[in-house]
Length: 460
Image (cartoon, rainbow, N blue to C red; front, top):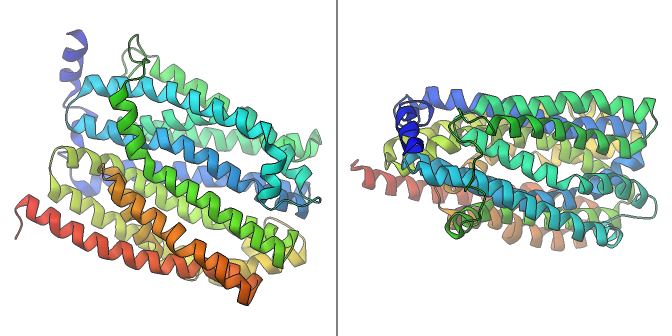
């Protein structure tokens, strides 16, 4: 009864503001911190690449690029729990089901701990064969192994940290989630040069810095959720896994899970194709391009994270006009972001890739790859927002469909077919072709869904 009274008391606080305040104001309030946090997260990865490229060498960048599929695979299992549970949390808050919201917090912690541990053990047992399959050569396997071993030892920490950060955003604390992410970036940026240049730990130093930064952020999160005065907090009874919560979280989280799994497959095919037709330096070039594109993508993802609790809450409250409004605003802003990224990559490709390396061959290959990869980015924002939108309102089937069509239906066949005729160039051009087709498909599905919302809201 005391818990119920507490939630009734706060009902007029942060969560219900999602259903009453102006949508534009809410999106700014939630998206700006998320964008800053996601930009910081992308810089977090970029810092590692820059220090590794400058401090260890161009082959180390190639070795780091080899680890991307395995990191994507780990992220897939993390998002299966974190993104799915945080979306479910938003919907439950919109439905005023506060008891389930509390239990979601406990289940997120336990599920991430289990999945992170299982993934760590299995990956470490077969690490070398996995890395060779992902495109490693005798020249790069040592760098990839040294980096990935440390990252895997800290995988449980990474999963729990990211899961709790997602819960922070969805429970009305986007600023705190932003602070946690920024703290990891700052600490990682401080530790990287110390471990790589001063202590001469090489690529392992970059990985150690990453895990230490996440440990600090996780300790702060655990302290926050241990506060009994917080709306959601740890207490007895919420850590037992509930079948309904686990099933619903995994069902909603299946979209980002499948998207990350597909990304893993895609990066494997890209690495294998580049290794076959271009060698280690071509893989290194993709590693640089991937980091730069990742910054733009993460900014849009931050915008999506700002949209997610607003769309989820109002969908749960059946306020379909507000759902449509936040979606339209998000698409417009996302398109502006991806267009800016396109313009910068076209005009300043060489200076941008030169930040990572002094090797002229690597610079030339990366600059050309950047211009090709981002050539259709002005329309990519639509595809990213629409896919995330369906996930946010608890429609995982549509989100999975959009995610997988871009990766599996379009990109994978292109990566298999085009390199046979155009060799290395075929690998690069496959990506923008798939992006363009997937964006058009997302727009068509979006128009259909908006018409459905208008009927449900009684709008003629």
